[in-house]
Amino acid sequence: MSTLMPLNDLRERLDAKFSNPQFDLSNQRLLSPGFPEKLLRGAEKDLDTHLPRHFFELLRTYDLSRFSLAGLMFEYGEKLRKFIEINLGKPYPWWGAGNRPQEYLLVASTDGHLVLLSTIDGRLFAVEKSHKFNAQPIEIAHDFEHLIHLAGDIAVACTREDRLAVAEAGSNVRFWKDLARGFA
Image (cartoon, rainbow, N blue to C red; front, side, top):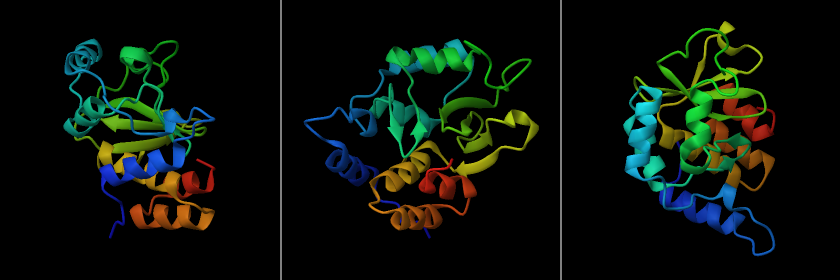
């Protein structure tokens, strides 16, 4: 059973924790508005794929142009430029050699992992950067909102023990426990 808080509650808790008049921590908050639908449709055309519904709707709602939570970095750039370029293989292909696997888009990363979105069913997978596609990607979230919930709940937790409890309650996947410990 998951203990994930509603997304609006998560947004408020991120605002409370990361709103600081002395420092710019806005990259750790769910800020609105997101990207215009026309821009998202253009990204789909550029990438020759359809974005899964949950992902599309969250991008319309929240600005992920330079977003980071609990060591999970999104950073899509102005007008989704970075997101599109990296999924077109610029400056280098994240998938290694050959053509990009059409069923995946790179949507986030940590120091040690790539986070991939299935364009087929919207599930999220992690693959270690050192292994790329030599290893089977591991499912880490059933949709993009679930990914944001887990990372956000870890980010607002006050202690290491709280972060680990959130990771274990939300998913039994080692990726989340490593993220909560700061080792992902």
